[in-house]
Image (cartoon, rainbow over all chains, first blue to last red; front, side):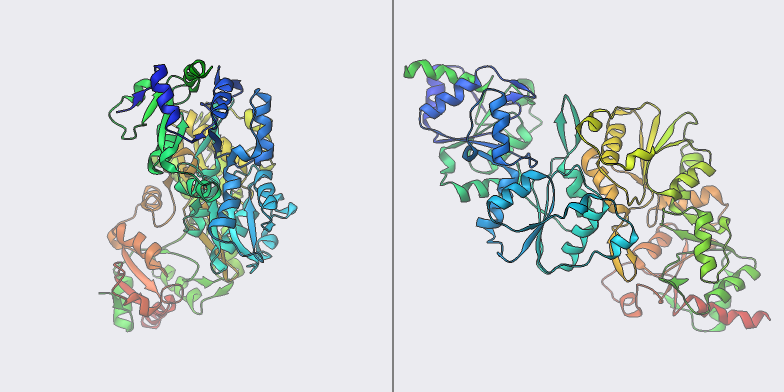
Length: 300
Length: 300
């Protein structure tokens, strides 16, 4: 049974039992292009109390540095080191979890965020500019196994095409030991109140031809948490995952052995939370992240 | 236990018990660009005996008319009406099986073969030329549900891109009753002794974002046979499926209640046929389709 945070005492106790807060962004901090009222104060409050804050996002198209601009636009401050995107998770996974050989390259299907994060981690990658051009039979025949490619990493790529599919296929089926990584496998993503095909669509295309299952970095897969733990010295029992969706954020937190807080400013409603048909229950829930601002006055 | 055709009596009895022969092409009639010796005579023999011959192919990129040229190049004769490709199967399915509304259009991800067969069946389709150009966010936002689209049909498309994925996604998730059809779901296809991503890769991309399962026309799915039966007045018990692969052609025949002949000129070897680990067994097998030429001299 989830505990609803409604009193100052409960909020104080909730904050005190955690050292680190992991935040989903959309639906928790903002909704589309609108800041959720009061969350700017909540982030300040938690920082003032010496809490570590990490923003965890499956968005692979932007590097951490680029993603800070989204925060700035909405009047929030976030440092690069507070952002943990799925592209960065891929870099951490390759560098710290599997010790990717320095003489190997990653074949990237994805956008700038992935390349920027691999560059920052000094991981060699291969994504020739002309991969975004269309292909004919001669071009298909010219694709050969490249022994330098040690991994294929698939993220969101609006320039996905058959040339890229065929290259990924050849590397994954011909190169011994070639890793298959995906930044996330979200079927769709929201954009201006609608949804469109997400990274999961591109990942499915590669699964569909190779028959291989990727290592998926993003939430709710636990590899994301393994990467966060590999980077920071987290005590999971004193870490809280804050999100607006039961089947991604809260599942991610529960499976990861963390405490969880569901906020009702996003996808999951209070009615859905109490629906017995789902079997994912957060430890805490609150109307909004800004509910935590109740604790503020107690400190002043 | 499969019966190997090795004697004139057995071959004569085999031919006599069938009115119709369905042929897989690659590995049965030819191998890549080389005719399998003697099969030209076999086809003549069967025609002379008044048998109906149908060439059943999952290849969706060419219309039946265009596919006859492949036969001609190899010195075989085949009329358009003897060829049953997966694009034609899609047209038959829409026209004869589901009675696709005349005022609706099919959104096509695919190449000329599909459009040609839909045109020949007077089925309206929608595949604007600029769909093959790349897309930006403005282009994504411009994609709206189109009430005229009653089906999305996915075949092999070397110009697959995000614009096409997003359109298919919007139609399949927003248009009430929109059908989802695939010409086939072959993971890969052979080309010059290698393999490359097949239609299954493109179909998987659409499945991956929409969560919908397509109606697959091609072998080994039985819809192909339903379409053949809808077009021709076949007695399945007097029809033989001839192929070189246990898990596609022979499975297709067995599930369809037809007799089956495995030829050893393609993928499946005699050793694999006798391997107890698989559970698909043809009724007959022969070293080559040309084994049937033994019957010829008996008639002369």
